[in-house]
Amino acid sequence: MRRPYAAAALLLSLITAAATQALDVHSLASRAASTPDVVRGVNLGGWLVSEEWITPSLYQSTGASDEWHLCNTLGNKKCSSKLKTHWKTFYTRDDFVDIKAAGLNAVRIPVGYWAVDRRVWEPYVNGQYPYLIRAVQWAKELGLSVLIDLHGAPGSQNGQDNSGLIGPVLFPSNSSNAARSLYVLNNLTQEFSNAIYGGAVTGIELLNEPRLGDNSTDDFSMDELKDFYTDATKGVRAANDADTINVTIHDAFYGPQYWADYDALQTTSSAPADLLTLDTHQYYAFNDLANLPHTQILASVCNISQLLKQPVSTSGIPYTLVGEFSLETGSAPTTTSSDQNNEDDQARRTWFRLLFEAQIAAYSPNGPGQSSIGWFFWTWKTEYEIDTWSYRRGVAHQYIPADVSNASDLVYTVLENGCIDLSADGLDNYTAPASVAAASGRIGGGGSGLLAGLLPVVVGLMSLGWVF
Ligand SMILES: *[C@@H]1O[C@H](CO)[C@@H](O)[C@H](O)[C@H]1NC(C)=O
Ligand SMILES: *[C@@H]1O[C@H](CO)[C@@H](O)[C@H](O)[C@H]1NC(C)=O
Ligand SMILES: *[C@@H]1O[C@H](CO)[C@@H](O)[C@H](O)[C@H]1NC(C)=O
Ligand SMILES: *[C@@H]1O[C@H](CO)[C@@H](O)[C@H](O)[C@H]1NC(C)=O
Ligand SMILES: *[C@@H]1O[C@H](CO)[C@@H](O)[C@H](O)[C@H]1NC(C)=O
Ligand SMILES: *[C@@H]1O[C@H](CO)[C@@H](O)[C@H](O)[C@H]1NC(C)=O
Ligand SMILES: *[C@@H]1O[C@H](CO)[C@@H](O)[C@H](O)[C@H]1NC(C)=O
Image (tube, rainbow, N blue to C red; front, side, top):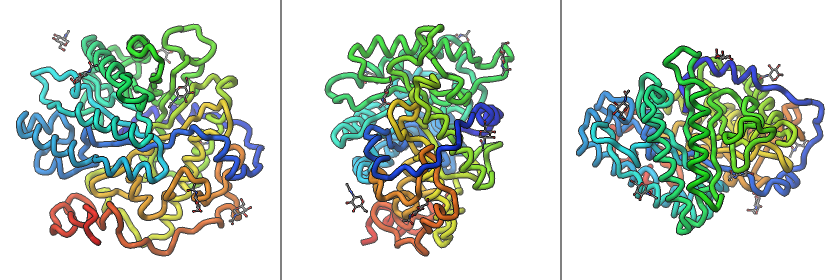
């Protein structure tokens, strides 16, 4: 999940609208029937790579804001035991069962390089790997597919908390950083192409959200990124003879069009590589895309829909996953973002439903051969269930459909171009319930913000589902 910087404007300017004429209503039934393989997923954010805003209690009273500094402050022993508890409890089999029950069929799992290749001088701790294995096994049992994503690379590829280390982008400053990343990707590919995992891992993402600079000498450049993508693609392909695992590359915020006809192994390609998927993140919570009027947000979502609904054979845009998106349209999340939750606000929940359905329609194919192949919401849950970032809260409070795989659970009309019918008639189709049902299931009444963590035990009991 990115922090703001200027490439957002670039992304917008790269999006071109296809014809906006085709406004025929695509029936819900044919939408479902024509798209059996669409990837409908959630991220398991803040788990094997922790993020302060997702689980504030882990960071409380440490003064740290990223995992490197968390462990640097606590020391190896204390950090190990704290993180082990977090890995064991933040995601359990119950979460996978709930994800499946919500009609989702995929999870994206961020991992840091230090789960595989930690050096003694690095403050990070490891021990994540058995939890990753167990997660893949649960996914296999439940029929979910897994995209494993290298979220943190040595030196940091974006300098943000989500990479494990806030600061300068040092990934390209020392070639050992790329070499170590290749080693990690090779390990993940070898491990998870093993038949015992039943093909559950369908993709490995080479590098999350690389942050490229503006050509000054010590910046991470596009050429350096592409060299890395080439070496890593060779590595993954060599370690996966059976070709069961796709290589996923992040678009580095250049937008899907930039990657038209991309083949990391062949510079003069006139079509995208086989077994390649592109990951583009679509957020309205950062920088120049934050706090836009709703109509502008929906227009932008509609733009990307039309771009990705072109056939790959025409646009050359690789098969594309929107690997991260959310319902936040105000500002970047913090440890106290859940203070803004407001269950009583019916209009807010109506808007969330519209924005959710507009986005999944935009990021899914509605016919064969299109660039869109699906999406992953960021994220399944947060410690204090921030309403715009927690998928499971959306399900519990009905602004996300109970079963997103069931077309009859969707309430808005989608036009043939993949955009929601925003005419008065179309919008009249739905208003959120006046109030939401009392806390239920595994989502308790859960307090808001960091202070809620200090509230009496009852809140904890509620969030464990013991309210009944
Ligand atoms: C959509 O694309 C068109 C054509 O490129 C562009 O003029 C417009 O600004 C875009 N709108 C949004 C909201 O992205
Ligand atoms: C690159 O990093 C390695 C450790 O990963 C270190 O041993 C080496 O000295 C570094 N090289 C430079 C030029 O900084
Ligand atoms: C990958 O690394 C993990 C953690 O160090 C190790 O347990 C596992 O055996 C390795 N797998 C392969 C195939 O090298
Ligand atoms: C970086 O330099 C290349 C080659 O000179 C140029 O094509 C590209 O537009 C530059 N990129 C930026 C972001 O300035
Ligand atoms: C894997 O990549 C191919 C493109 O080569 C694409 O058709 C397919 O949908 C991808 N599978 C997943 C699960 O992303
Ligand atoms: C889809 O949802 C409808 C309405 O909620 C329900 O009647 C139907 O049984 C569901 N279909 C499946 C396959 O679950
Ligand atoms: C939803 O809106 C469409 C217009 O897009 C209209 O044709 C349809 O009848 C509406 N459906 C319901 C259930 O109100």
